[in-house]
Length: 138
Image 1 (cartoon, rainbow, N blue to C red):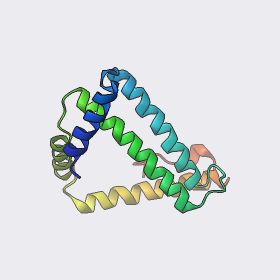
Image 2: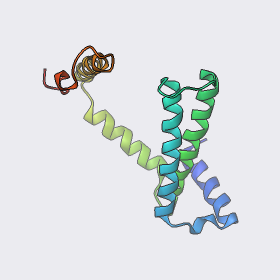
Image 3: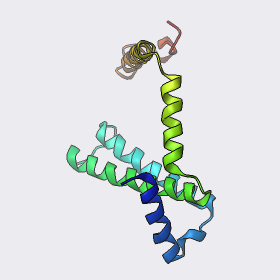
């Protein structure tokens, strides 16, 4: 299904129920709520929050929460007559232009990984937080 097709179906569903008159700022609040739910599932997946659910069950829940978030993203786009297909094509072109240098991207990822390793040593109590170098400090 194309983004625009989903956007049209969602717009019609909401129009039929009268939900098309919800203020955009309230749509954004719903998006924020979904982000919180996504964060909660991610914390379970990463082990920060204890859970008795399997990884498969958590991933299924994550898929549902991501879909809920996307529904509100599409709704917000519709509320402002934004063509999501066009916006996503433009975003991808911008991303490709901005990150043309694949090796630079790999260097940035290596720097990020090194920082995460330093940060983990603080979490484990192996160093003080002030000894963790900022990304880019070398």
